[in-house]
Length: 310
Ligand code: HSE
Image (cartoon, rainbow, N blue to C red; front, side):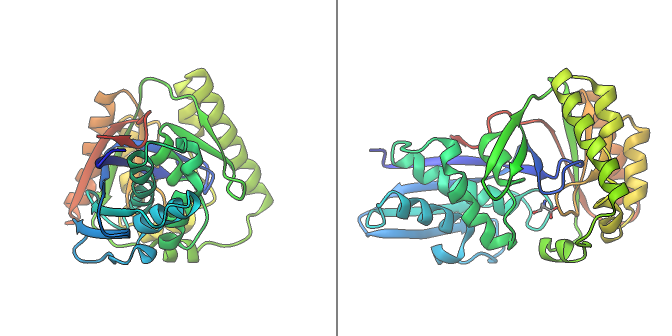
């Protein structure tokens, strides 16, 4: 058995613009690093957390990475094993980049690798979801599934955790800009209306289907015509300062589509090619910077691997 492993679990874009709570994609960076090592002291212990500004608890049952790891150990009947976890947060909290999901994925994945990978990545999904649920309060796999498995994921059913990997056109890139504005996921979910007018459902279903067809055919024009959100974006845009200006700047610079990443405040633009993504990212940043809002740009191809051992 291995003595120590270090894993990387990537950030992700929940909703992927078109599919609220049912679609998400993995980024190459940023992401969290989790170390798991064998120890003489029985039980699971979190021994170090960095990059969290003292915000995260060391109690494994109250920590997303810890709970994901401990629920896996319970399932494997290995709760007596001595295991130490180190959590290195390398991305902002409450950013719309799936920070808690990355930690949850990292916790379950690291312990699984340490134990010689008794479960497949897909089999780890329910354990990572338990960790994520602790932080988000909801049960939606649109960040956990892409962080774990990579690629663009359609969640056919959150209840059954039936998740499907969609084809990723080779030139699809993401420009994600994180403005330093705090939005709690619980707040961003709390403001949403619980009913969707039939007309909006019909329009959005067309966009979701069009986006998926575009992925299968690598049809960037179709992807561009489909990357829209008529249901969630109008309700959440007011939480992100200068949202519509940033969106317009991205589209004018050549983005296929631009909207909120997850529950925000990050904004994501999907683009054809890394050069356009760089231009789009710079145009988005310029709006926030001119408004005096500190921000950070992450440029990334869609990450095909998801969580990896380093
Ligand atoms: N699908 C989720 C939302 C992602 O938009 O609220 C954030 O957890």
